[in-house]
Image (cartoon, rainbow, N blue to C red; front, side, top):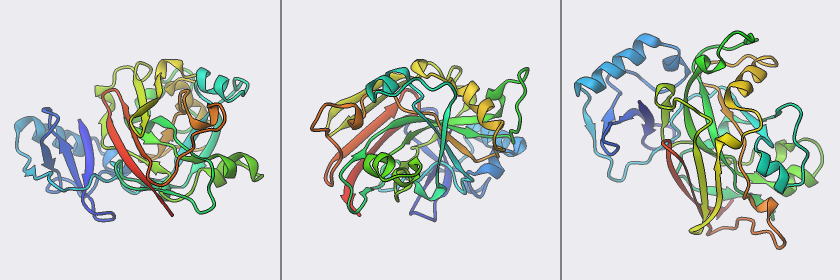
Length: 286
């Protein structure tokens, strides 16, 4: 299933994208929201699936309807840095021996086509397309004989917008360059795990002003999705509705020759992951 949330910011309603890929169906008669509570409720998900297959869900008029983040009430956004061989190489970083873990605040998450704000004083706002993993079951200390993917509800497109000066040159951890407002567009929908048989076989592409900048594959991840989920569960409890951004392939502005083409107000970024949908954001000054 492809689940999404539509409507004005803060008042989104749950919806489903039909198998035809164009028709929106209203889920508000079945569930109040798409969030961790829903993802942990197998019976509710079963009702949605049955209603969709039976054609019983009312159609939503998509004209002029904003698409919000596909997940409400996100608990935490865990991010994995330097997780593609080609991206580590382009930035001159050594291949990590263990996953690099940092956080984005849940309030950085916006809709897939919402405006992205260039922070005040920013000179180095950068793009990063990422595969987002959405947790569906509480995961803590996942054992070696367990399948970490059994804890995954589904997948989505994430844009890990980053301000490199704030991140790298201003001291401390990466957090200052990762948590500016609007810095994590998510969606347009999240695709349930049964529709993504192999998360290590997905193509990722990102364009800036129509020019292809990133063209990678999750097969190049240093730490695959299953390993990342198991690893993170050793250090924190993952709850239904938590999100893991799993890193970006090569092609970011940071890895380009000088003068590096960092983002400015007026730029347009478009990105997509095979089977997971497409985003488009125009940048404006904060």
